[in-house]
Amino acid sequence: MSLRSLSVFVVLLFVAGRLSAQVSAGVQLSSTPATIKATTTGLAAYFYENATAPVAEFTVTPGPSGTSSTALNLGVGRVFIFTRATGAPFQPGDVLGTAQTVNPGPYNFVLVQYAVAPSAPAPCSSGAAGLQYNNNGAFGCVNEVSYNPTSQTLLTTTPLASQATILTITGNGSTATANCNVADCGMTPGQSFYLDNSAQSACNGGPLTVTAVSGNTASWASSACTNSTGGIFGQWLAVQYYANAASFPDVVSAFTVNQDGQFEMQTLKNCKAQCVVSTLLNLDMDGHVDLWGSAGGGLSTNIHGDTCLASTNGGCGNIRIAANGGFSQYKGLTAVSGNGMPYVVYGTPPTSLAGSFGPYTLFTAPSSGYGANALYEVTGYAVATNSVQNSTLQITIGYADGQGARSQSTAPIAFSSAGAILPFRFILQSAPNSPITFTSATAGGSTYNVQVSVAVH
Image 1: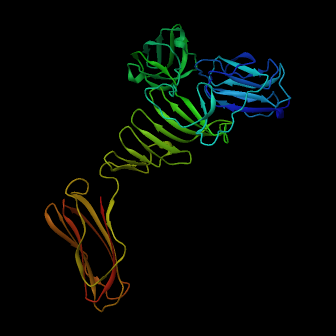
Image 2: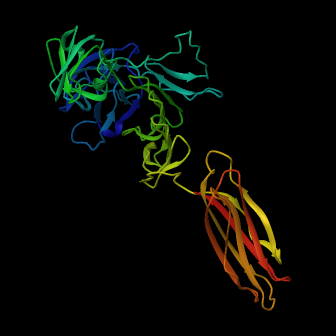
Image 3: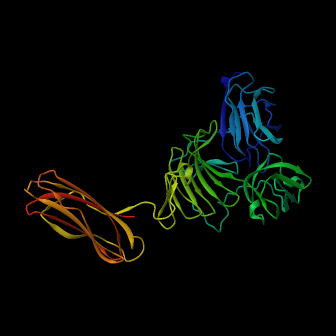
């Protein structure tokens, strides 16, 4: 059998409700590579974990030994399909490839071989939402539907890692051990899970990995989980996949649900080899959300109510806006107090003036809240546009602070030639509900452009 005659098709679906098999062969898989051989004549062979609630991630390298082929990594519950061209079926004893699990195992897999290859997914008709893969093992085109909370027909549930009932949990500062109502707590060494609903909150969370089983117990590494009752062995898995027939199986979208209800929508790419997240929307039960793309940037909130911008993977390491609206962090630098950044409350483009002008109200401080009794900065720039002999220019800013009416002025400067300039900057504290005014004094006939900005700090 040449590698050229062996084609590979990976279907992203959960293994339940399979098609009727021609011949099935059991395979025990562990982290040591195992050779997968055909046991009958056929055109297609489905290879997957033979379990009601799959737990094993695994890798398949298609093709006989000695050939050059890429290993494909498959997540929990995935199916690998070996196919052969019509007229060139595999024969008993033919090597289809090698496979192994990520964790030690062992795990029970099955190779379901078909004399006639099952139909491949067909493109969806116009108006259909896309090709859907779900944990019933079905695929096909589906139209958009709405969920009725009183109906369970549209509800898809992530299975538990184990159906065991946790009676008690004890810990010695490095290892936690659950005592259950069934042997090994229904778990195997190396199995990953998320613990939830345990009486001691320090026990909940994950991912956790089973390190040992014995009698009716299962153990895992934990320094915080010491003494608890109850709990659920949950999983963090995709419960629904969507794909377009034009891009499947390389690009898919996944809906995933954590054991505590955390929900994610992911777009995945490069799935022919190893799926990687391209974009993600995370809705967490702790009240925070994340929206980010692998190209960079993102938007998120945290459990403190802060809004975070332009950080990798929706993190809070760049720009952070506190729940009260102030900037509390910029480019990783955290503010100790204050509002984080100045805010421009008044600005004007270069404005043409002639002779003395004002007083003109630039801005009135609010009576309460942000900007009342605040520090203000008035900056500006004046440039003469004509020449008037012996002319001068003086800028005055009027305001009121906590002690009453105030003013600050520049010294009069020579302003008799076109092109003469007067940059100015004033720092002041403005009392609530008080105006900040601008006045310019110069000789009659002088013309000039003025640009002014007012910022609150």
